[in-house]
Image (cartoon, rainbow, N blue to C red; front, side, top):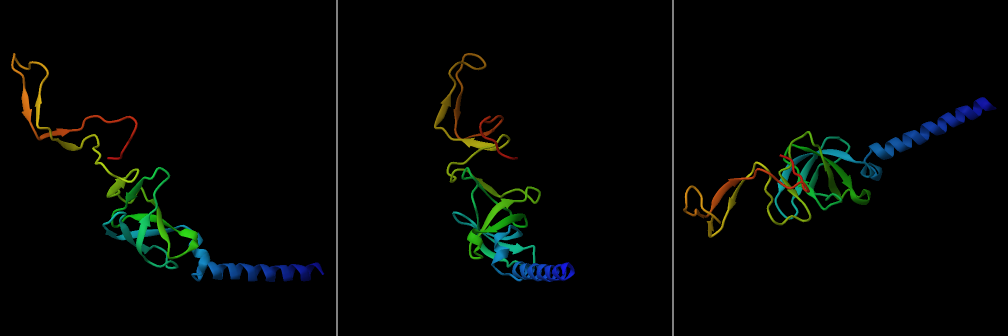
Length: 168
């Protein structure tokens, strides 16, 4: 009797495994619970920008109009064309794709936004323009004459904040 039970158990296991594989591989809703790798094909300007993505897996469709899902701090990066990204689907709904991560080895982001964006940011090594009507030194330079500089002035940032960091 034990041999018959083992045979029946094996048949049931095969049926369950086959049914699960069919549900996952055939494009049923379960595939949308997973995280997938896509390649950025097109970037559409806007606020926020959207992206057309090509699937790297034949089970998944190409996507149009996907958005980057911001990180916990509200920061997000815009991936470059040709870079790879990780995509999830909100509530396992194929109509709600969201880019949840970028591959750090497939190219730099084309833009980064923190806390909704806003004012421009300068990094160490960036050239900046300072615009002021007129700057006059507080004391004498090279003798007894004050120095007056008219704007704009081109400068290079040589140091930055220890609180915030940014890639090169």
